[in-house]
Image (cartoon, rainbow, N blue to C red):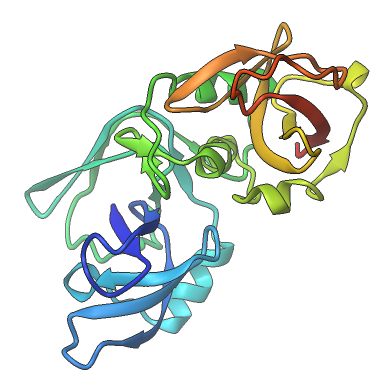
Length: 248
């Protein structure tokens, strides 16, 4: 995992994290060549990574990986062994194993864990099961793993593991997919919440029985009023359901 920062220095504010096998484009570097400014493909974030963590590939290979089918890691912690070394990789990581490897493994590859082909779409029940796997993972702005995860990143990562590419930010969720009435809600639909001024500011995944799984301090499940009824003012981000969007 590579952390992407707002500025070319450690602790400058975490924008996002690049998981194993994900791609990005380098835009420029610092004069001392210690930092690279990158554009992250999965969510469009632009920030800085330590140059020492960069793995260079050709443009032809980069373009190919954008269209090639790959496997997405779905187990909480998996391992990948090559060249006698063992790497531990997180859920949502990409596996380009076979005739078109993302990296030149230079030898036999051994993967231990669970994964699924990205192009094979998960059922709604499977998506909810993947989401539940993250329960109690702590909140971390910009985080994309079991050691900390952001609110939008959580939804995006779960959907990616289920075979769907969806937005990361609340401003994008508002228009993504199609809007449905609460009477037609199904497992995996996105529930968008507003504050007391009806401004969208939070989202979660519907898991059934009037509950959503979302990030508030940690990944958790909470009961909501799907009909748009305003909840008691208790500083909850689930104050009122504004929209329900279907992305699968």
